[in-house]
Length: 189
Image (cartoon, rainbow, N blue to C red; front, side, top):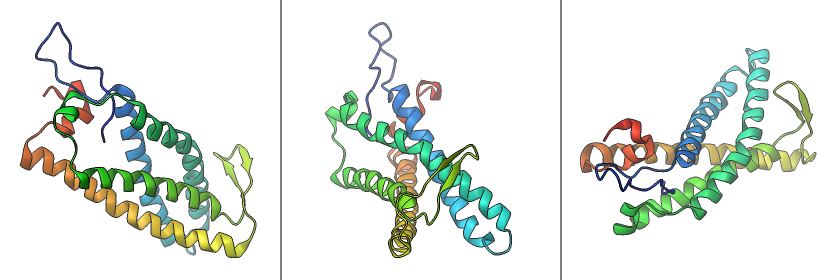
């Protein structure tokens, strides 16, 4: 995902352009939370009847993580639009399909986060410390957003897999620096 850069060093012409540290941090935080939430969400459906305490633990943890990640998602979305593009991005703009896939990723993340809050039939305790009420207390509306959330999660998981496949394609087949730019200077390439 295109984000700003620290830019090449004028002292060392061998320095490569990488995404800036904030972009990399937000990217990998979102990736970790999406992976966790996807796995936990499906695990919750497997244990809802057989292990209610595990279900409750995962549910509170999932909602707490979503509460924390929502402002980070907004920061990431805003940063994506306010950053300076990498010189490589100016020289060779992203393919329209890549721009569409990134827009869909952001849109689906927003839908999943929003529907996750709106589907709540009751409040939750933020990391078991602070009570958070449900925003809508209408079972039919909650059920609708539960359906939206499930569909959004499926579509987001599929799009994340496509995103990973595209990153691997760029890395292994095209041999370009896309993955290294998101890994940062420590990747030494």
